[in-house]
Length: 200
Image (cartoon, rainbow, N blue to C red; front, side, top):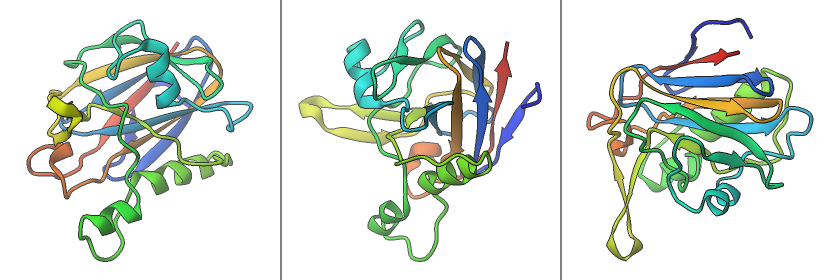
């Protein structure tokens, strides 16, 4: 992939190959956009970044700079090396899909992160065996008393960015989440573009 800033289109997805020791920086351009993020081992997409294995590895729901996400084979794949946002990201919530929008009362087709993931991988001629739970960058899911969850608007600001260093050759996939029925992309709920760059 060429150097420079790449656009993750509003409601759409993109994938990039990232070599070991390179970093990928994801920019919340307009400040209120959730970016679902996945990573797959470049030589075997059956191995992928796993939120459930990662939470066990760093022993917290929201990791910090220096923490490494691991794969379903418990190997480090992406390490947080920088974060100019308030650091609120989600590791709990599954990617939206057609069933989710049906449950929320939407009729007809709706863009969704699950299909964005597979379309972005198709563009690289890569097939994922499943849809792993994503790292939901900038998503603000509050864990309340008694363990209840609350879907809240992001607390990120325009231009906030997080940088992740690749610990193996991998394919990283992004989806500018198209959710507009809940306030996860801000109170007005209108999804926007985001951006990313690959850094040596």
